[in-house]
Every structure is written in structure tokens, then in C-alpha cells.
Amino acid sequence: MAMMKAAIFVEPNRIVLDDKPIPEVGPLDALLRITTTTICGTDVHILKGEYPVARGLTIGHEPVGVIEKLGSAVTGYREGQRVIAGAITPSGWSNACLCGQHSQDGAGTEHGFKAIGGWKFGNTIDGCQAEYVLVPDAMVNLAPVPDGLTDEQVLMCPDIMSTGFSGAENGKVRIGDTVAVFAQGPIGLCATAGARLSGASMIIGVDMLPGRLEMARKLGADHVVDASQGDVVEQVMQLTGGRGVDVAIEALGTQKTFEAALRVLRPGGTLSSLGVYSSDLTIPLDAFAAGLGDHRIVTGLCPGGKERMRRLMSVIASGRVDLGAMVTHRYKLDDIEAAYDLFSHQRDGVLKVAITP
Image (cartoon, rainbow, N blue to C red; front, side):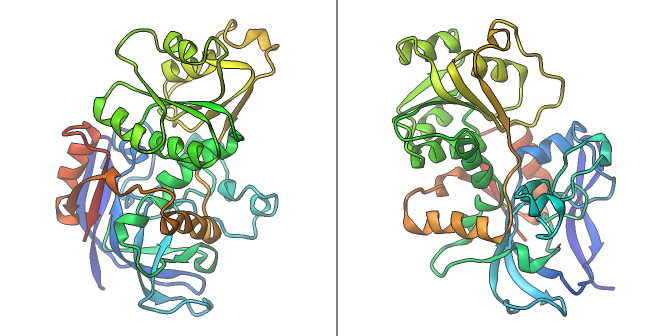
């Protein structure tokens, strides 16, 4: 039996590199040889035991690679072709997909969560922090990489870019809107870039790390607010002349940032939530205007599927946004345990880590 190296969840606080069999390919599947992948904040939730997955599962959901083998029923692709697949891998035919909610394909009650949706890689099936990954429903999910784009240029598309942009899309950011983005980690930075592309005329980036605030400016923030320097809500309200923001995007997943995002909304504004929350949220009565403020609170799971990936790579190819600077560190797969240690402790100004087998 042919074997491969893979990053495997053993128990909370232990993800280790070990050997696993190379997956067998079913009729609708494709086997990708991974050329580049990365570590996500959600993987850190898994590492810490805050999001439960099965022991022995290969982690990771952001694949860039080359088609090694195609299933017997897969058409329209060729072996040796460079492709990506989204972190969310919808089937294309489920009730959720046919209702237009591709991200919620497969939603159920596994692991005690009601809406795990189409997030399968590194969640319910083996993921891509490995030498190979099996992509289900390949014809729905594989997107060819345009000539001239490098692995690192498209590395953000499967999850970070798709999720961050969805924060602006779900918030229905319009031309001339004022937008505040809470937390300028990788997803928040992409939300900032997405708000700029959507036509926002004032974007306020909130964080407490100088390097991330500087990156926010590069990706479209007009103003930055250092959360370590005074009351964040007060600073945002001053920047908006007391009006509040049209859309607040929450990209961290904590009570503090969620509540601050709600408090800076204008009457009738929208809170677009992207955070992965590991405890219950409380909505303060005054911030919620007792339910009479015409506020909208929307949540979103990373959009997937090949058309979504094609669109995101088209944005990259057009030069309208450059996310290459977000890759701050590079590791070989053999050193992925060290990469997890760096990323989970947020040392050395890390934003994203490129992992290459």
C-alpha cells in the first residue's frame, strides 16, 4: 500500500506528522498532489480542542496542487493540470445547493454542530496538510489555475479570500458605504480588501498589532484604530462623526469584538459576522436597541465550488488586489509541527504560512 506524509489530529494540543495510505480514487473523485497549502485559524481551533474532529483525521482545507489521478466518471480535466479546490466542497445536487446555499451542503448534527455545511476537508474527511488529498465531486470543485499565477498568489482563494470577501458581500456593502472591520488577521484583511472592491468610501480597520494595521492600510483601510489605545467604539464613532457605520464586519470570533461591531452600527446598519465562536454570545439590550434598531445580523460560511474559485483567481489575475504579502513564513511539510507552534502562538508577525511537501 502506497503511503504519504500527513498532519494528523491526535488529541487536543497535538497535531503530528505521520504516515497514512494514499487515498483510493472513486468515480467522481480526483486525487491531488499538493504543491502548496497553509494553516488556518480554524485549524488552531481544532488543535486546541475548541472545535471537535475525529482522532486520526488529516487537517487542512486550503489546497493548491496538481491532478495526480482522475475518477472514471470525471470529465473536463486532465491529469497533470494545476488546480485549486475551495475549502468548502459542495456536491452541486443537494437540497442546500439547489436552494443556492452551496456552503451549507451536507449540514447536519455531526460533532454536535447543526451547520457544519459543505466544509469537509479536515473536518469530516481527510484534509490537505499532506502530500495528497482526495477531492470529492471533482467536477463541481476543481478550478484550473490560470497560466502566470503562482501557488502563493492563489493560496488565499480556497478559504481566506473567499471568506473575507463574503463578509462584504453578505453585509451588502454599497458604493459610498462606511465599513468597520474588526480584527485584521488574514480573514479580516481580506474583508477589508473586499469592502474596498465593493465600493466602500471609508473603511476603518481595527486591531492592536502594528504590523496588521499597516497591512490593513495597504489593502484598502482609510483609517486604522489601535484597539489597545482607548475605547474602540468611541474611536470609530469619532471617525464617523457620530453617525456610525453602515456595515461592521466581525472577523475574530469573540464576545468583545462582536459587541463592539454591534455598538458602532448606525440605525439600520448590518453586522456581518465571519468569526468562529467557541462560546455563547450575548447581545446587549442597549446596543441592540431593544430589538427596534432595524439592525441586521448576518453570518456566513466560506463560499466554495469551482465558479467561486474561478472568480477569485480572476480578481488576482486582474491585479485589482494583491494578497501575496500575507504569506509571511514558509515551511516544508516535514516541519509542519513547528509551523503550528509558530502560527498558533502568533509569533514573529506571522499572517499566513505556506506549507510545501
